[in-house]
Amino acid sequence: MEAVSRTLLLFNSFLKLKNINIIKRIMDAEFLSVYEIDELVYYLGLSHANKKIVKIMQGRRQSVNVKTKYNRMSWIGKYMKWLSEYVLYDKKMELNKLNAFVRILDSKKPKLDYCNEYYTSEPKSLDENQKNNLFNAIKATSSLNPFSKTVRIRNELIVIMLYMLGVRAGELLNIRLRDIDIENRMIKIVRRHDDITDNRVNQPLVKTLNRNIYMSDWLESKIYFYIQGERQRNINKKKHDFLFIAQGTSKNAGLPLTIAAYEKLFTKMKGIDSLPKDFSGHKLRHTWNYEFSKEVRNSIAEYGNINEELIRSYVMGWVPNTNISQVYNQRFVKEVCSQILKTIQDKMYMTLEVIDYD
Image 1 (cartoon, one colour):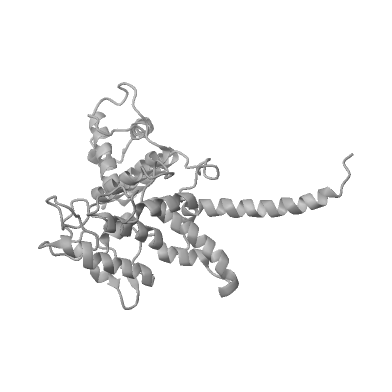
Image 2 (image 1 turned 45 degrees about the vertical axis):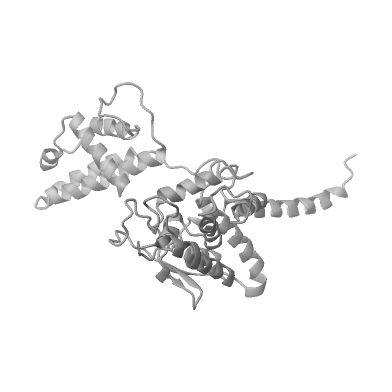
């Protein structure tokens, strides 16, 4: 919503720069000329972050990526269609010109290509060495732990839950005590957009679908230990039922943990040996998907044919039959491919070995 709003503000800035009264243009069924559309496309391709409104051609400006430019053009096209239909609600004949304008705008969109480095880029999941170093360091009793003793149990639990449940940051920070079903060993992930009981300025959001995720006895005991220990000691009079809270001596102690505080603790973890420089909580979501793919492959013999992507979509909260798993399954795809190629080449070698090349 914020990105769309910023795009509409950019469109409004463009119209002011060009002295275009868009309502009058729509009423006259003129819209934008091809030349003006070209100027708009150029304007939308520029970065306008922290910049004052200037003339379109003034100086060299940094460009945005192709995806951002594509989205901006798409949103403006949809906005113009909505605005025109609203203004011309009693002039249906003029919508033909509107559709022609939208088609021209669509034709100017940049082509979206798959990332050429998808197969050769570094996997976003953690390897075994990185995982071992992370969990050895993050243990509350570890001498390598980068945090003060007052927050170690909480921070360890945050990392463990991200790794074991595969949830996003917003989903984790949205978990309430009422969402933890001890009896059935389930954690509920619930969408609560614009929750009036959440007073955080930047409210953590659940981007995906509601779902119930199983938790093991061990994970349940870790959560219970934190709730009855550190959380109980720090909640004081600021009663609420969000699971994770701010701790320490600051004025925010006892309040729900914010996104900024969450990101700050992961910034501090980047100093742990062998972790990637861009380490974040989201890499644990990628790691979960890698572990899931390995387990499905091992479980086929026991459970028979398994609809891997349907199960993955449920746990991740994705709409069924989407292709988003391709983003999260890079490491596993590369490993399986290497194993298959090794098997094929070993068999080929056996064929070639009997041939006398001399």
